[in-house]
Length: 382
Image (cartoon, rainbow, N blue to C red):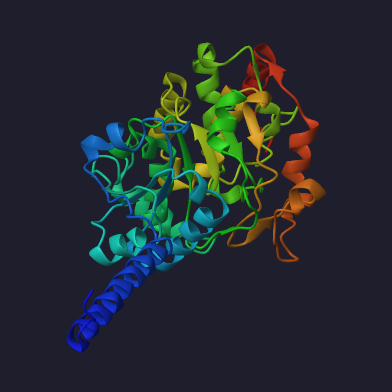
């Protein structure tokens, strides 16, 4: 064989070098691909949610995390989503639904989309659901706002009352929630202290639970002065809506005095068939006609809690003791070693260890329907 010419040798070396560079480039591309997050699921049209977001996938429930939030609260809700993804949802990919009485800005949408790989949806509230109740007058509402302005927090806030009424009777009627079986309410600027190594939605379903909570404070009396009186009248007029047994003793004691205990609904995981039931709708409509959402300051927390205690049994309500959680003002962190090992909590996150309403929750049990009606028929001694 003739010896290789120097020109051919140089060409061969160049070819081998080029082949090596291509191989190295391919390897580096493959390795870096593992470091890039998978493409996020972009929001899809409202009428497609049933096909895309809520049909069970790999064992998921028809469920989502839902927030009523303003554009100005972007950073607060980003913090919440980041924590939920880190603590729980990165293993499941449940959708997030964001609702607003105004159009969401592109800045808000992109701020959420870049944060999570879970499906995200943005919806606007209908004017039919967000606004002044048809059963109150603007003049009397303004009088009430002025009177209550310095009596308690949000005493003079009109928008806060709109929010409480919406969360009490309309959020679960939004088009984006129409195919959900469960929802987990989330809010801006809250903290989730613990890893959640299971699916709370599936836990609710497997254990036939209807309402789940984390914190049980006591409501300020001035905000709900006539709530129990109004509720008593509904119970007496609608006894057929009551179960054979209920957990009413948690919210009303044996002397028919309203305890003001409630589930803090800024965190709640709920089987939405409860809110969609004829009984709950009848109760909400009765409250709305009474005007207390505006003339007083009936919050969705005492309303949800009153309804759950009257219409459900204790075994249908669940304390998510293992989910460490803080909403500005009150925090809870589990103390049982098998739960606390999954948490990183500040020192003051121990509200439930001293909560009067949590202690009552552990002490009282269901009572029979006729006993509940007897309580309703007793005069309110509050």
